[in-house]
Image (cartoon, rainbow, N blue to C red; front, side, top):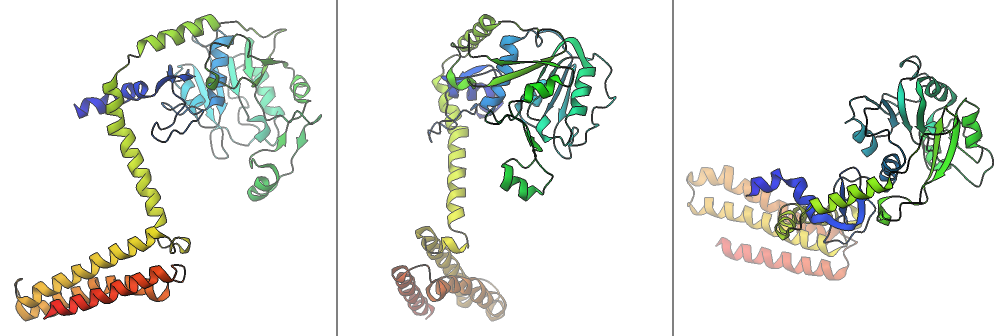
Length: 387
């Protein structure tokens, strides 16, 4: 049974999170807006595939406003890692370029130069990349070259709508970029002139806000305020209204997922509870380690008592067994095994509690007094048991 549950992990996971808050086009399901049910952590992250609301907005736009994806399109995707490149890697005719300073689409301007033939792609997705390039015009010129006459380019960018003109940032260190811009990789912040800058590179561009017709989508499925910038070489972009098809697909997905208390219980016991226990242990562990800020806490106090007690009495017991002759080897074994065990293992426990009592200034007088009294009683009992 447990093997089958693990094998059908995705099925149980979808069933566990099924709900009406988020429709996710990446994993084709409708889910609760909770990352973990027991913590009630509301989030716009898909609880099944972890897609972000920004990523879902892009894909829902392409599904609802274009007819490119259902065919066998030639697609060029330039994106930072995430669900978008992961999704498009499933298309046989897609070229997916991961953006990073060491990735296959880097900050070098000539990354695409002469790599693809003219009029190669039906769709180019280049979101939030132009602002990262020291010179973005060479990339736009290559897009013009490789885009088919009726193709479109999705050109999302970080735009400051309060500024009339694009602000070019000087080259600075990573630390300076964080302090100055918040996003260390950016070389500019586009202003209201973004469309004119794109047009200057022989591309037409339309600014679209696609809230109309999306009323049936759960509000956390997409960003209703997202403005899309569609670049193209023709007079008008080739767009459609596929909302009816999208809503039909959503309804079908809802009907395909059967309610199952068994799935909910199985997923809870085998996956959610272990995750909660693991996170709780990590949280506790983070508060009982040797960092100075932890040494005045109650958890650290309990940790010292348990660690000191276990190690002290473990060393004492080993020493007692060898000394009493219960374990073989006699006096020689006691000298070389029993006594060293007591001095090393038991001594460690003694110094753990003694060190807390003598040197831990953050503990407070009450905790230190308790440890001191406990240590004294422990020594007296061990002495009494030695005879």
